[in-house]
Length: 269
View (cartoon, one colour):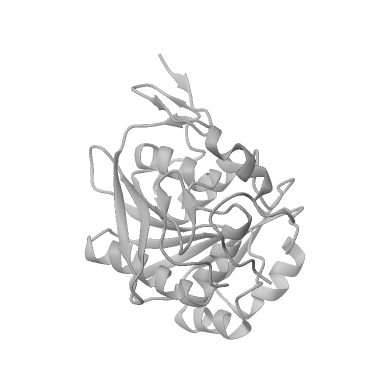
């Protein structure tokens, strides 16, 4: 009998805790989720939102991706905490560095995926994570990137120029009611990247609360075009239930003006 897939549903997959080691000597904590019964068709390397305001590897869209996409789409999902960031998985070494030192974090994640022969590596950045993808993610090992709610806050025109020159696919999913960059302006800003696709998502907001399923469908559409969409909303088979209660305060506070509890970190200016 089919069971509805809910926010806390964990579908079958092979999940293992991993560590990433940066060139500047830090150890970052993360998780790799893979399909249970087949090799992955593609790999998502997730770059999370601003850690000083609640962003982490378990931010809800990425948590749902790791819990669902290995089974529903045959994808591997690599999530990790950037320097100084905490989640249930643990705390990565170092401190938040305003998208400067994080260049080593992105490189370590890509290197891990490449060393472990994970196929067809795509970056999926969300908010602050989109800036990291634009600044540091145009690596030869990376096939392309999907940007969720890009604010274009830390990234610069020269970063977009690099993507334009390579021709690597770049998709920006931009909420209609985003707090920082809305679809019309996003199309203007990304126009310098000829291959960039800007997708406005009607009714959505920066945090994608209530719209995670739309996001996952659009990500899968780019990285695994052979997978039928929309993704199923029910599952006929074993299913576990995760505990998301630890994140109740952080999901809604992620981009508020009040920092959430966590390790001491320098706030972004």
